[in-house]
Structures are given as C-alpha cells and as structure tokens.
Length: 243
Image (cartoon, rainbow, N blue to C red):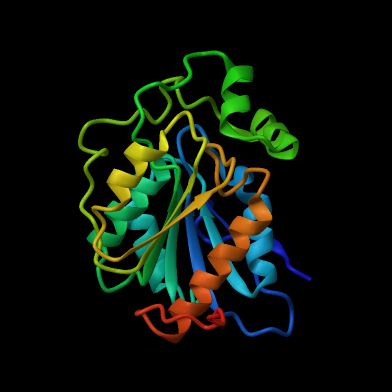
C-alpha cells in the first residue's frame, strides 16, 4: 500500500512512497503553481507512487525552491532519475531550477506553462471552470488552494516568463482548450526547449495534470519516465506495427 508522510526534518515537503516490497524506480519533485499547495497534487502523487515512483511535493513557504530541490537531490531517499514536475508557474520554476542544478536533475515535466495574459480576476467559480472539467479536482481546489491564479498570489514577473532552458529531456503537456494559456502561444514556448517532447490533451483545460483526463496524462508521464530510465535519448519501448 502506498503511504503518505511529511518529510523530516524539512516540513515544507510532503512525500509519497512506492508500495511496500517494490523497488523505487525514480523520484519526482513537484513544484506547485500559483495559489496551489501540496494537497492539490495528492491524487497525482498517489497515482505515480503506485507505479513505484517516489514523489515529493514542495509546500509553498519561505525557503528558496532551488535550495529545497538541492537538498532533496542530496537526500538518500531520492533515487534516480530525479525529475522535476511543474504546472502553471511551477512549470517555469521547474525549468529554471533544472538549469541551475544541472547535473542533479535528470528531466523535467511541465504542464500549462503560463504564457497567456487573460487570467481570471477574482471570480473563483469562473476560474475553477476554466482550470478543470473534473468535479473532484474543483472540490480539491476549493478546499486546498491558497487563492486563484489572478489573485496576485505568486504573481509572475517578466524574468519568470523567460527562464533559462535546461538541456535535459523535457516532457511538455498542454490542454488544447486551455483558456488561461492558449495552446498556440504555449507551443511556441515549448518549442524553444532544446530536448522537448510535446503532448496535447484533447479537450484539456489549464490544470492538465489534474484535469478530467488525469489517468491518461499520468499514463503518459509513466511512459516518459520508463523511457528515461532506460536512456536519456528516450527510445520508445512499445512500438506500433506499420501497415
């Protein structure tokens, strides 16, 4: 059974473990986006840990993210490959952190990179509707989020929108109906990343990791991780038969 525990000594990290008796296959470090807390990623972390990937979700606080990730990378608990995961502003932070910690981070997974300018401004119900079509995730956001994307919490600045881009493999996932970060602008951003694999989600909204299609997205993440474990060139494992 997968267990959940708050890390020690750092209380700003929440960890999920692989099922008992199964060897861990890697470590994901999740960087929440604007207004989000670790609780928002409970479902995502539980699903990935069931596939034997250890998951650490950073709880927003006063510590520098790069410092937190550096500490986790040095922690014997974190088995390789070490992969950063970020949605919304967390995607930008993940890319910048992977660059800053080159040699310690093996890959990055990003979703919903915030390239749009039309963000919700104070209407929480309207924001929930355009962030996700999943009723369960909407309830989680109501209970666990610190605020909305347009509330001013963790506001983005110009420097954050142009992060240094890492050389490690990057998986980019984006909803094709994302109204917060329109797809065309997001694709233009993702294509700047040197070693990127881009996946779009049919009828997907902004919170692609936690939207109604979260099972398919999690499966896509696992396929990427399994290929990464074999080789950074990401050679496919399961192939289509050509007619």
